[in-house]
Length: 339
Ligand code: AQP
Image (cartoon, rainbow, N blue to C red; front, side, top):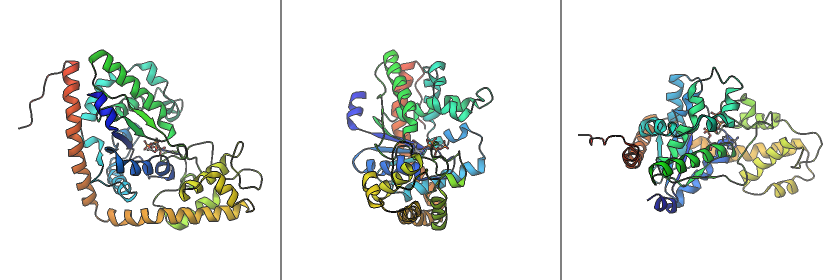
């Protein structure tokens, strides 16, 4: 059965409502989700339980969860085509996470780079959830027997871990899970911060000047791009030793749907100022329809909540089918069907 699902090419991916979505989330992940929903059976999840792995404000988390749903729909996700739901509304995620945490090893979780980065050397005082985060993430994907996980480069190591857990579980208890693989785009998989191109653009790390938010108004986008750091020199050229320009040129190429070489060629006789103005205009035009659609959707939060609720009901059915198998294999009692 696992082989059959692998061939079906189901995809699963998630996003944390831990802050406002930025260009890195869009170019590295969400735009690929939109493409994938056309031809594949796709499940996309707003992972609110993951957002609790760093300190959070309850009211903010609740509001951002709905806002993230509205923004994903504004980006082009269609709840009629793909499953779009909130993680905590499908309790099987937490249940499978516990079972997998009894299969995962301390040593492999200790090697996770994201834990090292986010705990910033204070690993004794951060919450246990930050450490076990990749196990919950493995549960998210394995529950849906997805074979592909479209993500940015930062998630590669976590996807490798979930493969290892799937294979280990299958060996020990019998063929249950599909071992998924990361689907990482050749370009845009690691968009860097605008004020420090050695760091990735991030929701929770870096000040407002480090990222373009998908719902930034035009003036804010223009200001952020004008203030973005550049490299020494004068030529608009990407490459070794030019991390800032490589990032800005990549943004231009992705927004336009062209290549880094084509952008370099177009701006070969331009200065940084002219290039940045053109980039700001392009990003404003690219993000305008998303922002407009978001404003419409968020004016009726109840409708987004309703769409997410039906997404959760559909996801729960698939998840429960997997959980019935898992419980039987690991020795847990059958559940009575709800009356
Ligand atoms: N800078 C980035 N470039 C390309 N892709 C990125 N992603 C995140 N940052 C970049 C991809 O976006 C998807 C959702 O990310 P997430 O919500 O799981 O959180 P994250 O990967 O930890 O990203 P953030 O924005 O930095 O969030 P916080 O600050 O909350 O941790 C993933 O597919 C990710 O690869």
